Image (tube, rainbow, N blue to C red; front, top):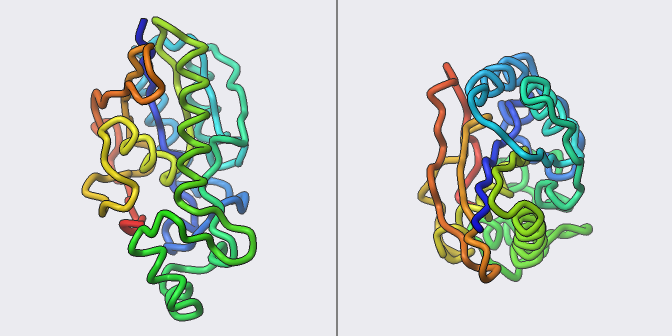
Length: 215
């Protein structure tokens, strides 16, 4: 039996608006992000979820809190659903990172799957493996059910590629707006047996941001 997953990127933060890399740094929603979380909750009011999973970082937790209050669920917080660890790039704007680490930034921007950020960051391959494992584990736990996952932009990039077969190194040609609704499905056979149902639905949002580079 298939598992249907609704993936939601957290609402906007001040660092999103500044185009500053957050990674594992724990930044809260700004006022606009809090409004987006409430709008997303209203947009999902007609949906029934068997369970809710959420990154343990507060921008995702705050977004999930608005949604699960309407659904009557208690989310399970999971560090495996965190954003990619950007190492020395964390807390820098994209322009600052490009200036300070030009060679490393070029590898990041080109989506080199083996590139590891300096100072403890993850490669794209490592990050994708973490997200594949987390989504597969969630899907296996809920055959025939629909679940909610509240997470981060980088995670959604990996999820879209998992569902469509797009290579990690291919430039991004799809949007990842804050607080939009993204639906994928696992068909209950192989770990790779995923499909895309709908992506970046934002009818419930008045204004939203996709500040992420192709990387």
